[in-house]
Amino acid sequence: MTKTYNIGVEATMEVIGGKWKSIILCHLRHDTMRTGELRRAIPQITQKMLTQQLRELESDGIVCRHVYNQVPPKVEYSLSERGESLNLILNKLCKWGEQQIDDRRANGEEITLLHRDDVKLQSTK
Amino acid sequence: MTKTYNIGVEATMEVIGGKWKSIILCHLRHDTMRTGELRRAIPQITQKMLTQQLRELESDGIVCRHVYNQVPPKVEYSLSERGESLNLILNKLCKWGEQQIDDRRANGEEITLLHRDDVKLQSTK
DNA sequence: TGCTGTAGTTACCAAAAAGTTCCTATGGAG
DNA sequence: CTCCATAGGAACTTTTTGGTAACTACAGCA
Image 1 (cartoon, chains in turn yellow, orange, blue, red):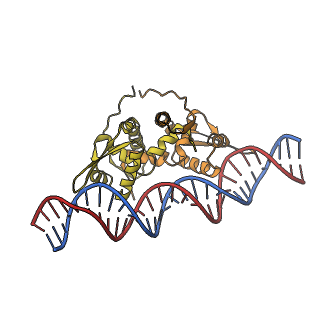
Image 2 (cartoon, chains in turn red, orange, green, cyan; image 1 turned 180 degrees about the vertical axis):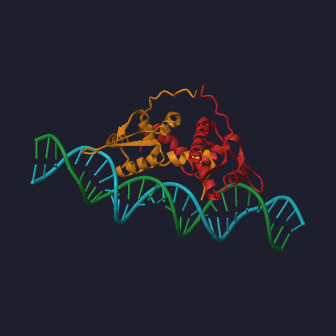
Image 3 (cartoon, helix red, strand yellow; image 1 turned 30 degrees about the vertical axis):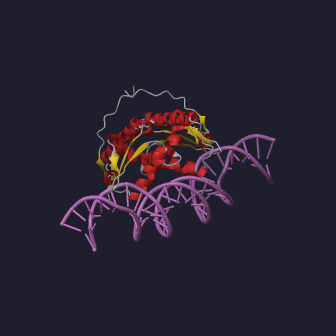
């Protein structure tokens, strides 16, 4: 009945794993975003997956959902404090991937990165 | 035909995502390990998944596979140079998860972490 | 009146990931 | 001779994850 993890990384991947969550979180690093903005920022995601993943992130305490009571609906998402604590990790995950893509292209692979991240790595302190 | 990523983190998660890969990699941070050692270190993994994930990590250039030509067989796995470049990220993924587990337990959840990571975070330089 | 944009739900289906079971080969221990 | 440990493979099933299409509500606009 007690939830058991063997190693910390399991708990982390439970939160940021899956096809979409880390991507959504990377976008939310910069701004608070509306549902439609997120959908346009992640063109391949469907409305269903976007909502579903955001709901899970919300119930894990990673993102905040702010509903404006108006029609047509307006809902904004942003990183919670707990979500912000992932910023450094998200930055590094982006950078590492960019580096691999560069390496692979230098190696002759046909591979493209559409949006390079311009976030400066914060110091680890 | 050209492989396209929208954001760096996609490429990273392609490599370390899934239920087992990040766990395997965390264990290999410390030592070169034999197949059986890994299997014992990750009790819930099956032989099949272990082999499969290690093969994928190998073909992504993250781990090295060293086969000793002897009977009974002996095979060792270790992080490649590219794999080592994930060390800092893996450490942070572990630490973040541990922190969350602590928070959740402090919050009354029944939750256990069997193996706390004792790796010191390296400086980012 | 009918169309648009918004955020979301639902039922259903497909694909990917993971799990189960049984199989291989062989030197050495007893 | 039999059994063990080792690393892995093959066939198959189950579970999880992701995708499709059709639907809601309502203000604003022409």
